[in-house]
Length: 194
Image (cartoon, rainbow, N blue to C red; front, side, top):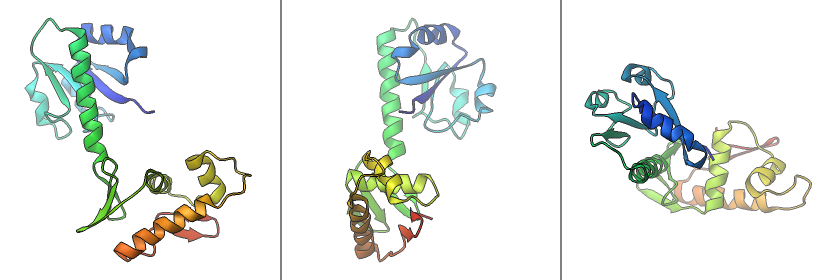
């Protein structure tokens, strides 16, 4: 599992405390000495949480909003309450991030499991979502053995038609509702989404 980033700006004591317990945290902490270093960081995006002390100036950056800024105003801090606030903000950021993944002009909502385009929606299964995400993330052709191993956890030499059956049903769902025969493309070297 990839940990979300939590940036701590110019609060060295907080960073040191969290650094001591980092093995128990569900997020990765990164320290910045000032706002400019953070703003110039390539790691900064809308899914990262920023912790600062009385710093509304940060909201002037396009990658920082009230949703991903925890602006500490009251001290001393109660560690349990701070960790709870951090985790709640991270969960909200992750939920929002997953609410709309765009793939070939379609919207895939990982929270509701709806796949949509314009006013048309279909509900997908967890496995169908895994197939779409896997094929979309690596823009190469994936053969049956690769899909068996990486989506179902089967060994490559195991005889099964699970992959073909799932791909056939998924392609049929998309074709029937959206009229798109080429969402998942079949090639002699495997399946892919271009």
